[in-house]
Image (cartoon, rainbow, N blue to C red; front, side, top):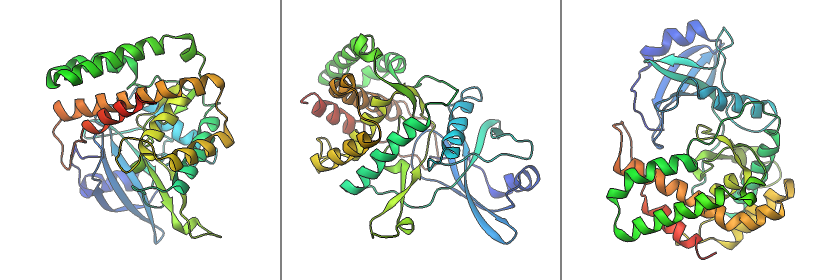
Length: 325
């Protein structure tokens, strides 16, 4: 959600009014945060009413890879899962080209992120994540998680020169452990399907206006599916737990939030015995994945407006903490 490809309202006004049925573009604002794509809030007016969308220009994903993500969002939205729904142009297409790069427009979800979640928020996320997994069971497309084991194997050698001796030892030994885990019969037996793979706190919205009988926030929806893939559902849950359920020291688990997340998830889709046995290793896999990506973004950055790389040490500490489980 940084801006690598600057674009202004005048660049797209005619395109929006001529190619779509969403009215006239009235405002375009770059979105700060994230490090993968150029994202903008797009406001339009149709028959006197204001409508809000998100315009994304994809900086790394190709036009061949993108149909998986966009069709997955459309599939989930049609199943009642609160996710952004891709907007079709007048030809029925949901993938376009802007500034020579792939682009898409999706509906904007209501609400705000809760960056300091309580157990209530974790419970809502766990329940909806399980519903999302089950809703994607009949999704016909498949695509591997592009940031899984193969990518770790390719990327870790690129960041090793930037690490000290203890970090090198930790990351290389963890990669070896994960290679063994990923090639085990236990791993093969884990249920899998369409997974978000990046369900951090800033990719979930809560909408107080949805609440009817309580003052507590209600879930507004999940967004930013552009790391999604066909993966083990347990990995998706581990990624979520590693971000949503942190204690005040930002590395160990907060017991109440973790319990709320897991109980609500399993109220919809109980974990299998093999999933329960694989939980510690999958938490480590989820920590390694984001440590590697943050090292890559930190030491091998791309130029972008509004880009602030995340601190890699955060997931190094989480990985060390998960070794104690």
